[in-house]
Length: 71
Image (cartoon, rainbow, N blue to C red; front, side, top):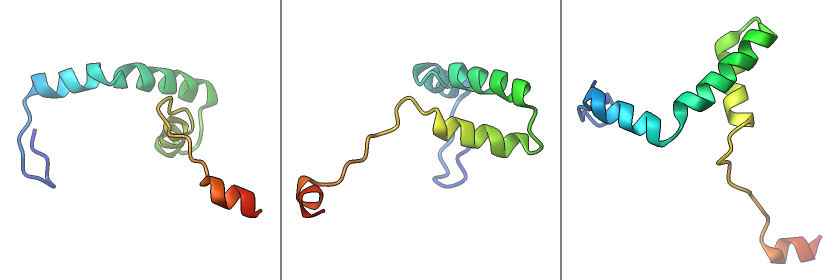
């Protein structure tokens, strides 16, 4: 498979190793189970939003201490 942005080619093994190392299949399976329960009108949009909302690695965003004191 070729990355159309960088032009780099990836082997099936590299792709599978990356998917396994990042637990992508686990998250997709969880999302697809919820998708099947919900049966939304726009399933791909719903799944994308679900993945963003349920991102277990989502960074916590906090305002700098100075901004909190100003309020």
